[in-house]
Image 1 (cartoon, rainbow, N blue to C red):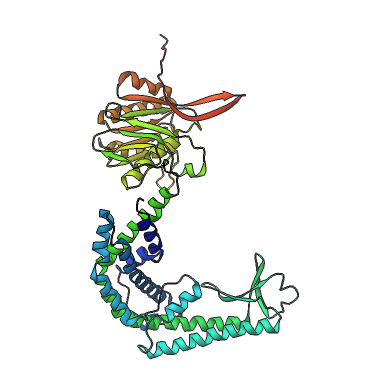
Image 2: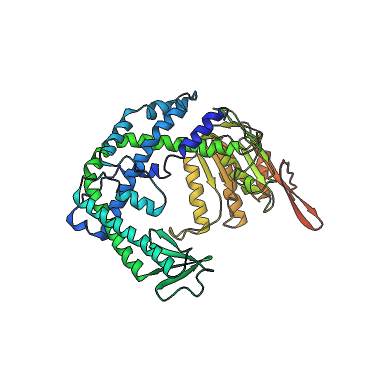
Length: 476
């Protein structure tokens, strides 16, 4: 974030890469079936179209790679400089691009507009490689031109100067006419009239016929193009490990720039902080906030947390709607953000690196596994108890709510004692006030409470966390 030129440069360059790049590059890991006579019908061109689109996306990605190298060339960050060395300076990507350009036209690029994308896919391969492909292209161009001429004819014949010719992949070409211009001018020639906002969408028998011919010609182009690409696809698949590296690098840069850096740059300077990490130190967060809810509620109340080996269990208490569940989620999200390399929404944060985060939240059953609410709760709790380690973070919300008060209290108490013996960092939210007696037996237990006031006979939720001491008087 200190290097604004690098930040804005990466932001602009990443826009050059198609959003589907990571998914498309992974598709080359799978070997498709060869094109046979049985699948060369016009109704089976979808697979061919996807393959052509994937190679176009790959070519567009490789075309933008030199621009990424120029931006990362002078980066001092170890992570970015490593991306520059392993990806931008890798000659394998130039080799793959040269192989594609031997078959593909140089001007072919990935497009999102449906008809432009269809045209790019039909004309991806260079002319003269396949004679039947050139004939199919000619038919495609003739039908496309006939459709546009038909639209011009209807504009003049029916006095509809604002008639617009639109296209989508499902319907093909159709007419879009402003509703105010269509009053009294739509004859029986226009069929399948559908109101869409302030426009009417419709077609005609002539347009429907041309649509079928245009789609058939495009399908023939796709199938003939796939026949020309079989050798190219096999050559690309040999470098699948290189493509996987490229996909991982682009995903990493997208996460760092368009997610982490963009989030931090859009907030005031004191809203996010760089966390510190320790091996055996405390989990300490000062004025922490929920990273999602604070964007919705501008008056979000911040709360901190401090857990150490000397006090490794926090029991959070308070009435319903006081903020206990939000607080637990907030701590988990903060730890996750810190360990994946992002600044965290707090004034200060020091994080002990955790190996796992275990959560037990919610009260739902599972019809798929024939488990009641209580059974689901016990399965999840048993999994936690069997896999927890001293370096784990455990977050449990209202354990034992799915059974009777006495049984729920017994289960919650035994789980707390088990976690205390392991010395894992634990945050335990509950309504059971008797659980606070753990603090009188174990010195490493702290009790926290969300305060609620009563003003004018209405509850006033402060959503503010305080340390409370509880004293119980037992009757003999």
